[in-house]
Image (cartoon, rainbow, N blue to C red):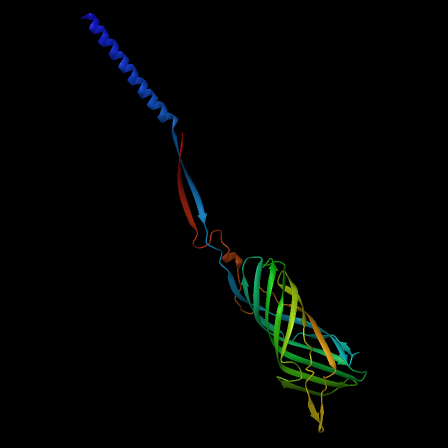
Amino acid sequence: MNFIRYTMLVLGLTATTGLFAQEEDSTKVISESSRKVSYHFHIYAPPKPRHGYVTAGGNGALLSFANVTNNGEHVRNIPRFTLFFNVGTNYNYDFSNHFGIFTGLNIKNIGLITKPNDSVKLKQRVYTLGVPLGFKVGNLRSGFFFFAGGEYDLAFNYKEKYFLDGDKKSKFNEWFSDRTDLMMPSVFAGFRFPPGFGVKVQYYLNDFFNKDYSETINGVKTTPYKDIKANMVFVTLGYNFGGGFNCKRHDYHQTKTKYRKGTKVIIEKRTVIDK
């Protein structure tokens, strides 16, 4: 009887020890498997908006030079300076603070002064309405940048003055004259400096005069510009692209904010279980 009692006691202790060992192993597995939870913050910003704005611009003081020949012989000419009437408006479209394009409308007073001989002097000029198309690269906010492009001018008023021995003998002007080409293409390049002035060089690709122009004097038909070749270039001190004349001024400090409109903060929860 005592043998059976001792046998049952030993079996009970063995089962209890095994149960404790199993619980200890399970606890050990749970402790060895640790869970890590982390939170990650992301800032999403939509594409930066592009900026279009209108500014005062164009040409200021303008100094013209010409290479003139008559039947292959050089014709003496004088650099021509003009301040009036050169104005314009530009439409700018900036892709970033360092690159943009522009176009606009410019009215220019361009022309040349020639001296066929010591007694005769001719002043010939046209008013043009030009449409430029160009690009600009550099610090577009308020610093230094380079610009270049092309322009088409519409010549709408021609004026000529004739001087003999220093005395003005005659003058006339014509609207949409045939003495020059109606359309005058050109290319230009320049720099802008702070606080807002620029220097530009512009070269015209065609002759100043229309070689096919003809007129009848005393019953005789003549072509006064048939043998004349005049290529013109001018240097001008231009306005800035930053505003003026009550035009809308583009303020980068207002449009360039730390976070643009539509910016979102995204919170991502990550759970990692290490085994």
